[in-house]
Image (cartoon, rainbow, N blue to C red; front, side, top):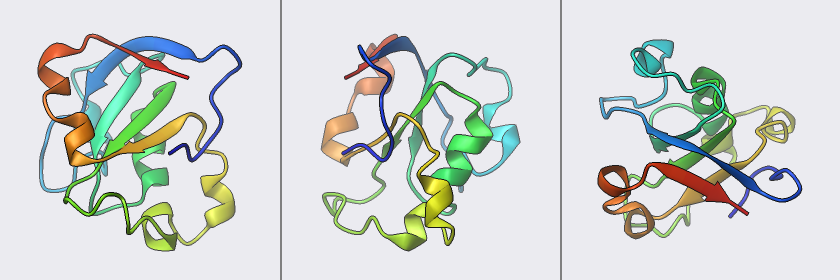
Length: 114
């Protein structure tokens, strides 16, 4: 479920998992200790907008994993932010269900987006 375009030919990059806290990806400090530049950031949904998570990550792409089992049924203006036109600039961003991301952080080293 892309929110932005993937470059022609896709994108393969190191996968970096944002540590869990009360508001994952919502503060620049959430990315401390890892180099997200040129990588794909896997960030849990919640608290702040997807656009804020992407901006804080500074990554080549962002995958937002759902934080509830609602099958992404509630992705709306609140999730993207009030300025939906700014959300169009979130390049190569995807959302996955909780089932789609189960176990990924423990076994994946690279992400390939097509």
